[in-house]
Length: 318
Ligand SMILES: Nc1ncnc2c1ncn2[C@@H]1O[C@H](COP(=O)(O)OP(=O)(O)OP(=O)(O)O)[C@@H](O)[C@H]1O
Ligand SMILES: [Mg+2]
Image (cartoon, rainbow, N blue to C red; front, side, top):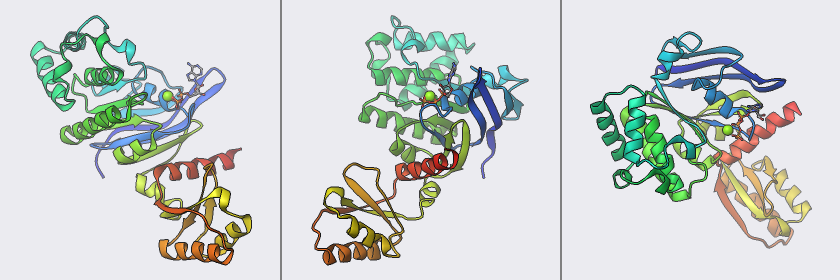
């Protein structure tokens, strides 16, 4: 296992009577991309703002590269770059991209030469040369997001904290930002902690995923491990409106079909332990009951895993 760059232990935060974070325990390793997943209000932004020293925690411990957050906030600030959710107000509208980056670089106490080198490097990673002389206000949402990320990386921090970096971006721009980030983290040996509600994005990007539920980090594992928690690798999906209940029950009696998920309006998903015997069970039941319908097969996604685990946690607590 790689070295731990950031370690958060039992972090707790309340806003008045409301507990926003109850127990956030998480390690961020050297060179990894870790995604924080959870419902609206689960505590992701609160946690990331505590790590970024924008909020103070009530209790718990945070260490970054051996420095304790309570005693060495100033030192720790050099180690991370943070991008929150408010991109619009993170740069000056009437300055060009280059002017903005130079200004913020200087504000961080960086030397002119150093700023120039960093801008060159980051702009080439983010394929952003063509926009350097445009005014910030002339940029699209995706381009603004790229500027804000570049701005956060000017001091070459080893840790990167991004709160919903692709929120509101179209799929192509979001994909571009993801590829740049992945390449940057890999080649420059950085560690990235991000939040996202886009499960396919997390699956593609993250080495590990931390699931946060009602202020508590409940599970941290690789996307593959999380998917395996469902207990099946594949689903066979049948059109719901044409499937009689007795046929559904018959399919579920087969040992290779342990359960079904009925959360989609059009499709009912049967989890199968083995795709061949699962398909046979489905076809046999359909034939016996003379049911004609469309069916399809798919592998388990991170979204399935997320719904499964969060569903189980909600059952436990409610
Ligand atoms: N300034 C505040 N004052 C009071 N309560 C707050 C404040 N900020 C957040 N909260 C509450 O703390 C909880 C966690 O909020 P937080 O913004 O961390 O969630 P989140 O996981 O980032 O959600 P989202 O996915 O919607 O961004 C929520 O219940 C929220 O209402
Ligand atoms: Mg949030």
